[in-house]
Amino acid sequence: MQLYNKLSAKERAALIEEAGEDRLTLSFYAYAKIGNPELFRNYLFIAWDQMGVLGRIYVAHEGINAQLSVPAQNFDTFKKFLDEIYFLENVRLNIAIEHDAKAFLKLKVKVRKKIVSDGLNDASFDVTNRGIHVDAEKFNALLEDPDTVLVDMRNHYESEIGHFRGAITPDVDTFRDSLPIIEEDLKDYKEDKNLVMYCTGGIRCEKASAYYKHKGFKKVFQLEGGIIEYARQVEKQKLENKFIGKNFVFDHRRSERISEDVIAHCHQCGKPCDTHVNCANEACHLLFIQCEDCAMEMNNCCSEDCMKTNSLPYEAQKELRKGKGNSNKIFKKGRSKFLKYKS
Ligand SMILES: [Zn+2]
Ligand SMILES: [Zn+2]
Image (cartoon, rainbow, N blue to C red; front, side, top):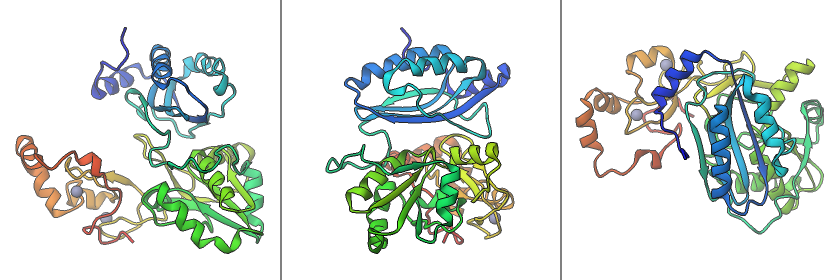
């Protein structure tokens, strides 16, 4: 039985283009005790492959975290399938506001130690003792309260292109790094302030809110379904939108525009821009913000060095990379001494 993809990403892209079918982009997660993640993984792969699901799904002993797209006509089958798994019955699906048939090109279901890639390895607190979930309307009301401290639980390259007005946006590279920093900054607020947090789809706040409660914060709230669900509710219920800019997402779209404001700058020339790209030099692959003019001028590269490397024939580039290890393992996001305008 076929348990992995046999089509390449390119072949998939061509297939989707041809089919021209509408796909829904969505994400969900659940903490649950999964006895045999490998078995569960295979079960999901077989079923979802048949439904034409594409995406990136992490399965671990602690639960599941899924970002995926489903052909619209198979959505009901997909939903029914989820509802038949006891810990996924009625799981909240975060549906993207913009759909892109090419958001995902393959179905990848991976067994991991943790379901959040830069998550905590801390068994000292109870993850289920989390903060109070609030919807968009309650969240907006909380932001009006002068006793509220709002914290963005995402990383620097995410909040750089979009965040809630007035949020604290820690300058961190990973979720793990952010927790102690925020705790130190907010230590005087444990008793009486509302600690309100948000992230992309809500999963990081599940753990973060439990962590801060464990650390003695009394009033902890989290935006249910994260920015993705907030944007949907704001649109549907005609609420005031307090999010400015773009929501960074972890698929080929890279972001969803939530408001027309452009709050970031091209890292090379400094003009307003909020388009993330990866450096065209495969060995670098740096994630950074680049405007169209700079992309032209720099051949989609982050630096003169990368331009030079990238202009070499492929074989010569491969030769240069030899012995330097896998560049993706040292994947650096949005930080480089060559980027003049990265604050
Ligand atoms: Zn520029
Ligand atoms: Zn580069």
